[in-house]
Length: 469
Image 1 (tube, helix red, strand yellow):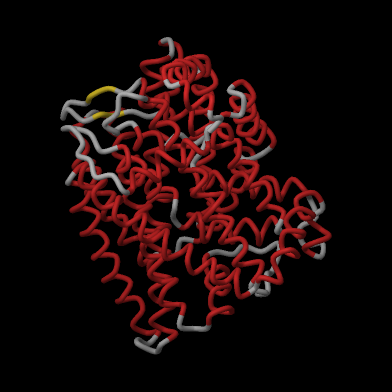
Image 2: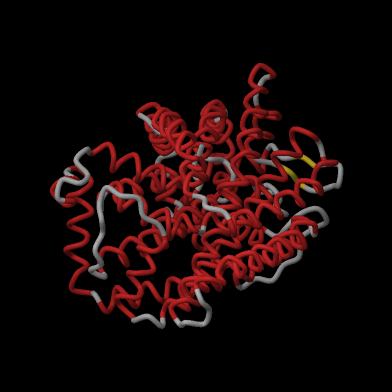
């Protein structure tokens, strides 16, 4: 049964993430970048300033909203997760070092795509029956496009609901149990025979935490992520930079591998990855899996921000992709490639590749820290995607289904902790691709609205334009 699912998914995945999808993702990002004058570069300094400045600014949000920083950290909670650790490792193993280059290209264009998504989400958001701000692709389709396009909103929401249980929950919790199991076994704290029971206990504990936080609503999610995300990112970045310092002499060679492998993967992988499109496909698809630019999901969180300026919140989306992919994913790739570990190119790999990079450099003791980082990353992603799923199912069925959804979503964590999920990663990647299609169609159709909002904002704040930030 599992092998049949894997086979069918491979066929669908090759269609979803084939040439049309690459043209769609790269094409829309290029179009938005060109016609905005590559605003993601011109205003990157401003985006970093307003995002990082919010870390040290304590504010309170109005009823039914979160602070702009909480909206950002909730979105980052969903993006800064196992995609940064397992996703990058998988991209390198299957697509070679060159996949990192294409991940960068997808991120550079994705910064503008996410800028548009977040800006449109805040501009076209509305209040739900509980008085909360709700927005995202389904709402900018509903409130921004003619009725003939409304089916796209339901299509996106349906794909979103199907995606969250795998991408946002089961695979994340499975990563948590794998990290904890590895740490416990490496120090002989437990025996391999007791792992199943430990995983069940972990699953029940995570289920309880998810349920408490999700039932508390967007404010409780925001209050958790604004504390968890900066902490976990700081610890991970610190450990990764340490690996680079210790292996400083290898960095020039690694960058050479990345650039050479992007166009001639066989020369770097010994022929294991012989097709350039494989590197492009894995780099772009895993990049989107990590930063969600083009997916539209991050805009759902940003739409709850207590702000009157859609463009200002949109610039936080630029920072989000920059932090997720340009910083954290790049550090992960360099840890794997600089540490000198053996990579079996052409074969599937996950978080263990990244963990081995840290262990090779620091020694076995670092498995405790990597376990903590993985747990934080994966749990925060579960919370972020829990919000996305609740908004998607709410759009289809109304607010009455929110609590039942939260209960079902929470209990999926037990399955993620105890079941074999080999087929889930591939299926999750396929559903991610299916979500991209209705979202990018909508973003493209609403691009003139986006350009107009950006022009209006910077005409009212001309000093930012003059500074070329």
